Length: 231
Image (spheres, rainbow, N blue to C red):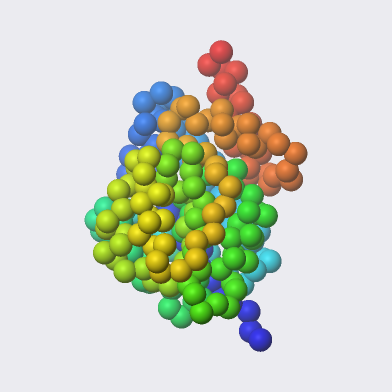
């Protein structure tokens, strides 16, 4: 039996085209916020690259700015345009581009550098099962959002538009909107980075005994150096 083909879309913004990590920049400065964004993005990309060598998935950058889809920063994977509008519209747009004919699609943010290879593999395995009931996977973030979302079906765009984003109820409302469509699997909660308060949480998670990739350890070193300078 052929393996189920999937796609992983990493949602990114491009330095020089869009303001990056504005809440983090308010505390650490624009230059440092951009440094973190690039390091975090490279860490997530390294995890996705490692997994794509183990599983039948195709990685994509989902780029926020149409004029930046050919930027050299995004040369590692294929690129697609996120489309216009709010986050709900963009999630729907990317999903509709990638689901057929693939068996599943996974959305990732670029600000959870402590996402492990094992955890992403686990999400793929959950979505690779053959089932009469559609399968979903959600990785809840500590702030109420989600750092990962995977689906075997293209969700109605109206559902994406009903979800409030960047609030404490984001993941909960999304779960409520899709709970009657299929089975939802929850991954462990992780901290994504929107403000300076999340940096120590990410450093703590990257300091565990797991085998982290070199790109992930660079994020840990960056946070530790920032902490040392801030003390």
